[in-house]
Image (cartoon, rainbow, N blue to C red):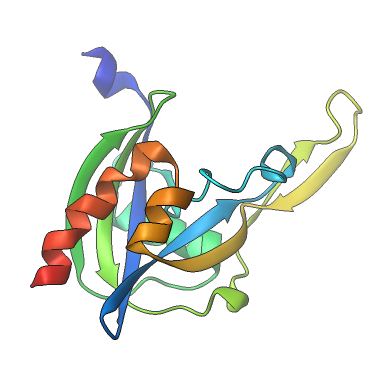
Length: 158
């Protein structure tokens, strides 16, 4: 088994919409204390781990619903896979749709906070969602996920 195939693998949805001549993509900001003051360059696709035996698209739809509190419906187009800086592989799918970012109500996670305090605190997996133009998204999102924007362009042209 190669090193690449042993790395964690996540699945993501790149939700997009067309508003006049300007396509937009929905990105999310991770919740929790580590991300609190990290905005520019940290927005990303809603994503999560693919469970053993689970299909990537099913995992992407499940994680979208868990993180945003809303199901992801519609035809999905594969956007391939990227490897993030820490080695995690992310496979993504483009879905045309719409979502009001003010309605997100996703899952929570618990972590010891502050560190070594013995106190557990709960935080949302996603603390914000926002529509971005493709140009804005390229400036605001994780650099390792930017190739998905380029891969979306042929779908937008059709």
